[in-house]
Length: 481
Ligand code: NAD
Image (cartoon, rainbow, N blue to C red; front, side, top):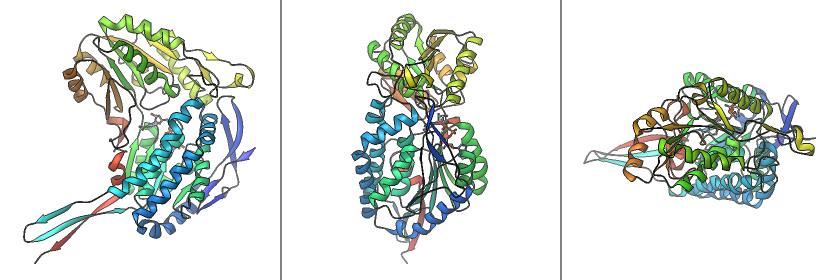
């Protein structure tokens, strides 16, 4: 089998320890390549390379940095097909989704930040007759970027692109569950002429690679996307070292459907917001609240459509639900489906494993699951499941549904369906959430702030906010006397 290599100091290389572990294709349950089991020695090499590359990269004119990053974007687009196939093989997501969302978005991430730095400016503050202050925005140094498995190249590039564009060098770690497209990106960076050491990608596990990145004194800024518990573990190490941190964490997002909604649009989009990418998107709405007069009608129409979703081979055009990313994750989802029933819930549809024909029979497939009859404060409705499982509940008043929606420890995204404009604004303002979609879901403008409140995270990605995160402001005051 092929072995993935680390990308350190401009070269593809084996881990110092020469050890590897299996990379499993979730659609077959079989290993198909080896992942470097890197450790702190590889991280050390990556940090040294990044530190050595920093003076030249950070002082390069923005237009030249921009041109290299635009080139990376163009190469991702050139290789869209190959990258999409690799992403679906690694993650289990339908190929049409990798082709239409994941890989195009990775190209856009590079393009957006490559061109964004051409339009940045900083402030000046005049003190009449006395002095003038101006603000410099300077790159910080070596940034540590750690990303999850659900949108592998999409989220990896969402961090790396602004970090590099703003003049930092990077030591990055993709998820060990889905490392392949990050490996392919290394080759594209070499082809694009990215100087050696500017971006370093170290493959391996959270404890052996993510831990040393977090703890390294030569990495003053950490951008992390992943689970809330991991975010807490990272903070515990990084906060006493006064590292700058951006944490994008878990969610348990409400999807609130008022009786006056555009019914067909609400049903159709709720299918997407519940089950896109097997429900493995931090923005998926996993708790559906429907105003009581519409409850039965919505439930029947929704469940009928869910039952029709085709589960199976990610490489089939008609597949709507591919494979769950890993066996442990499949078992975690099944644990929650059982818990929901112990807590008094009724499974309206789904919750069953699927065994397709041939070599896919040992893959990780689960039918999309809708559960009703649970109180809003039970564990099933409080804890993140991160799979193709939603609960559905009726509500009577706006006040009541806001209390339900805001009752979890998370606050990432919320969706509201209503034709009443005043109510839409009022509910949006009162939701404890970093992102609110009204009559839509996952409409993303890369200029907007992205992130959560409460235990869904700290800080915002997106737009100029990310470029600001990866730079330090310095005020320079000049006396006019
Ligand atoms: P995870 O926290 O298990 O892993 C994320 C990354 O952190 C991986 O690369 C992993 O190897 C690394 N890691 C693990 N332990 C570490 C440690 N001790 N120190 C440093 N790094 C460590 O998350 P996951 O299972 O890969 O992803 C799913 C989670 O990510 C869900 O909770 C989901 O909601 C969240 N997520 C959030 C967003 C967002 O934007 N808020 C987006 C996508 C996913």
